[in-house]
Amino acid sequence: MRPIIKTSEAHHASQQLTRRLLLQKGGWMLFGLMASFSGMRFLSACTGSRTQNGKPRPGNYDGSVYLPPGYMKPRGFLDIIKWRLTSDRSPWPENLASSYGETPPERFKNQGIHYTVINHSSVLIQVDGVNILTDPIWSERCSPFSWIGPRRVISPGLRLDQLPPIDIILISHNHYDHLDIPTLQKICRKNDPAVLTGMGNAELLEENGIKNTIELIWWQSETQKDLEFHFVPAMHFSGRGLIDRNKTLWGGFVIQTSRGSIYFAGDTGYGGFLKYVNERFGPFALAFLPIGAYRPQWLMQDVHLDPEQAVQVHKELKIERSVGIHFGTFQLSDEPYDEPGRLLQESLAKANMAPESFEVPCFGQSSVFPLA
Image (cartoon, rainbow, N blue to C red):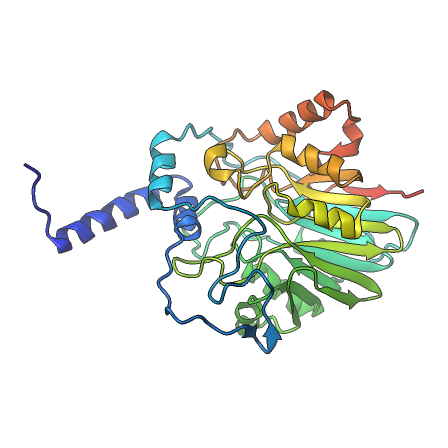
């Protein structure tokens, strides 16, 4: 006969289990995924407004939350528990030796596109005399807390004070490893750049002193510094807590420049939406594609590309050069530290593609992509 557990005892047991899981190495990843994949809607049952901050919601808004651009298998707490119980988590180095790259030019107006992968999804793009920074994070942890959560294993490739004046910041979505408030506050106090992001993120940014924000919905465009920025779909999700899953919009960016189109995918899984990105904006001169955080694939495949899929995206979008991002900085999943770059090179060889067509960048090292 099963013992009867009182509600208070069950609640206490649940709290104890959660506490133990959170205190494991990388435990904030578990907490964040519990929040992200839970799919539970604890908010009001009302349908919600079809506008936000006076702007119309996109077609993928159902009255309460934003929907991905394709079917995404619902994930719940039991999936997270299954992951933790069956995880074959590879050990990562705790503190890799690193050095800062050379300071980039203040402006780049020459033929081509100058870019520096800081690490994770933070990239400095310099083109047509404009300085663009994507998903900047210089914090030690990608977490709401300073004492727990995924901790970087390598320093950013540049110091903050090495950055040139930043004109535009692109924020793909509100996860802590992509929307880092302390970093944004430091950059915006110095430069006051325009911050382009998905619908619903301005409130968080503005209440933290980041005022010059522009919200976009999928396929919406914005002109800044004579460049065209287009917010495009991504197979992902949003959320910074237990009850806000998909309450704000996520996506990638296409930047149209005099040197060709640039695609910053942000965080995404593989999906049919890529066909429409290509039809509208391809072919692409340069792309920054995520290649990490994909194991276990049964859990991650809907929201993160693996290296082989990234190569497939490179081919489908007819990209001249792709650059890997979203790897080698924070341990967010189970694969070994060095696996994404190794599998990427193997996938390129299998596809009979030149290794230089899809770069595994050295963090902090600048490159120039010349266009014909």
